[in-house]
Image (cartoon, rainbow, N blue to C red; front, side, top):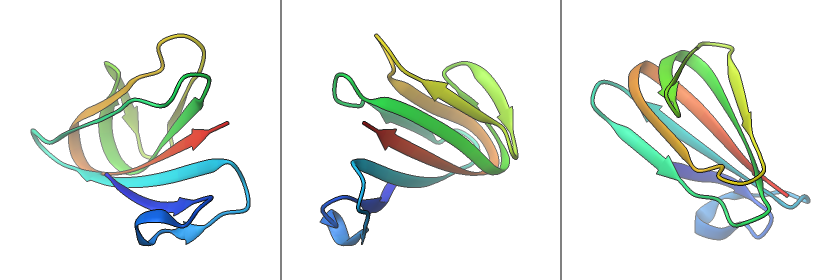
Amino acid sequence: MRLIASRDAREGSVRLHQDADLYAALIDGNEEVSFEPRPGRRVYVHVVRGEAQVNGERLFAGDAMKLSGGDNKVRIEKGRDAEVLLFDLA
């Protein structure tokens, strides 16, 4: 997973004028990505192309999942040519 946009332009990302981080990942086969946001944050995951399993739920191109509240840890796995965007939001 690579940070592509952030409020502080860290890690070479594009600067956003919002309290948000945007990550991108390419997932295929046995690859797996995990993300644990800071407490109080919300997470939005969007599958741009392909398909992947997000926290046990199969998502296809165009599908999305919003996680908020208590345990909003994210696990993305079992991708099939998947391109996934993950938004870490205030």
